[in-house]
Image (cartoon, rainbow over all chains, first blue to last red; front, top):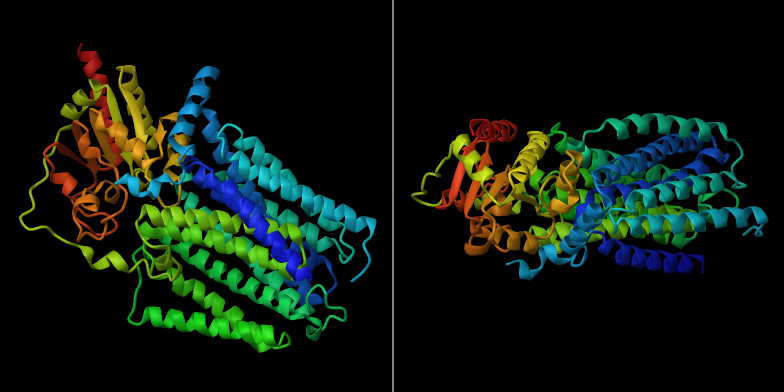
Length: 122
Length: 477
């Protein structure tokens, strides 16, 4: 039964992912990728249990390596995402101008994000 | 199953909150202005999940966990702060590999220990469902580890960026996949079958290498997206194996993201998705080096003359490719942009979905140089509309994404790929290192069109001399 509930969670989360991520404009596709990468560093949670639970020496060593790798993934992933997103925001001049720029970017990219590959492009 | 304590309640609450923050964080990426704050909240969500996990009753010693966290932070911090934006694809590949190593190791530990539901710590205590989850976890995990390291090697040019192919490659890969699935089936049928588990693990490592081997540098956006998806699936499978919902959710989010991006990239390159899943995509266009008989010589223009046209243009569209990033020409490009703007011209950038080495790569590189993202046209149709009325289109280090054969020549390997139409502008300047072909090895008839003028040289050098000439125009008056 547990596995059925897990499958529910997986499918619903995947669905939410599709709906949300489909709307991310191509402008932010690289930060999107580093963001999802950072978030999936959540394997850290599994690694912590493996390293801290007394399952024997080998398990502790493997768990420790897993914690190091996952923690690197999480730290680097979130920091680089932040660094990139700061660049996208960095060029605000006057507030009104910034709004206009965003509206422009939204009109160019956000409203029809699936368009880049559409047949209409020909 | 043990009874549900208040401690468990706190742990589950922290996971639920973390999941909500993750989803809100990704949602914030739909609005460039809110994205930074949203992702900072997602990072807080991660911290919350880690703290919650520390309360787990199964954890008896904390020293290795804390040392591991500190080491990870020490390794991760300088990596993230020092990596140049041009190297972002390698960096992401590297980061995928690290996450996947963790998922794989957790899978190995859990298998040895008999799954989280195992009472006596014996393998026989594992259910078929758990065996399936662990099997998929090490399959996707190990595949992502070696696949990401291969991608890293290719992007960093430690390995040749050209596709490495051999006879019967697809047959070998299909056999590997077949044996992997048989092992997975055996493992699910009998969870105690440790041989099947380790054979699966070994094969998955091998599969990661053999899948990325035949893929060329130009196809990297697809590979990176696909690895993104696999890394997510590995994390999700970990969640199934250890009965942890936040892992399942976070993994599903990344899996979905990677899948969407792979689809978009394959559309933008006009390759079928099936073609990509089976990893055969690197090999296809290699034979397509069609050299048109009696090709005309491209016309050239001097930087002086080009500068005059740019200075008096009212609309300029720049089409950058990966060549611009390689030459580190984005900063001098901004200088040119500002000069043209000062002269009263409007400058826009046409960014193709597959320009660069990963989805959206050039947007980051241009933003790094301080170019306002309002000037970046990321939709092919929008960019083509602007090109219709542009005075000058400047192609910098791009080739296949402006090849008219993609629309006009049915025999071209590029045929059907959505491209920019710079030739609809009054004049086209092409900044190019030499007379070679693009990644796909296909000739580009754009270069011999009547309104196309070539500026041969390194992108940074050519743009620098254009900037100098425009400044000289001012001083002359």
